[in-house]
Image 1: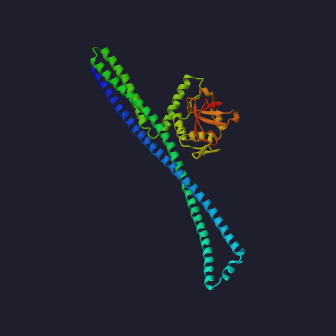
Image 2 (image 1 turned 120 degrees about the vertical axis):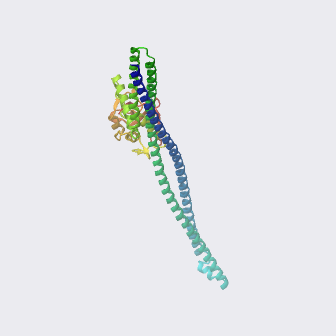
Image 3 (image 1 turned 60 degrees about the horizontal axis):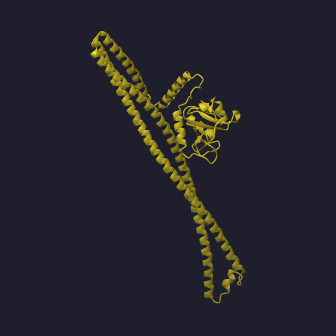
Length: 387
């Protein structure tokens, strides 16, 4: 009995070591992926900052060029008026006209000199006028080029902002995956220790009953090993399904909570940690409030919630009132992170925000402001809604 028990427990211990190796490897792979995403986030944030600086410079140059064009327009107008004044003066002076001014010369030499003088003045004025117009055309072309460059930079900044938001979601999913794998690793370590202890007990058993008892303990350890093995394998096979995995985990937790508290509404059907990660990243992008906006160029309140939840497979209506109709209404006091908050009642709901917990929410407030955090204590919502 001792020999059979020892052999059986040895196999279990070996299995525990194998599972521990798999769990450790999976956790290390996920950590490597997580580190890579964090590095990309840092690189992207640097590019976002550089892009904002570049856009500011372009807009500053564009404003300066516009001012230079306006100055040239004034100069050209003044020069044209000056030429007109000279022409009028030549007709009204004592000589009567420039022709008489030349004709009244005392000698041929003086006539030639006066002719040259008149021609020089006219030519100089005309040349100055032509130069100013040419400069104006060059500046106008420069302004056009600057405007095109600024628009291109805006598009690049928008793409970088989207990339940063996507990376924030990846980071959250990987962190959730890593936590799950760390839990599997901890279970495998516990199973290994249990199997080793069972082996010692079998070896030290002085009777058949003691050996049987130790073998039963080993079987319990084996069950733990099997459970850990399944968890580790499931995590290792989900490298490309992190988002759906964390969503399923959230749903399972929600079902458990619902069964233990029958009166409470079901938890949100979306992964709240991923939703909050994306929403938080948007607060750092200086995105303005735009009536009817639903993109990184600008959001209104319902456009923001529609955009965020849409990234996680949840299609929301376009207005706050319609979104409220899609949710299960709950008191604000029962709101959980990832739920929606609403202001107004019935068809008169006029504002919506994403609850992040701790009495705070993220929303697109109003014109002149940006996507940012708000506080229930500062502006209390009428009710909450769970998707």
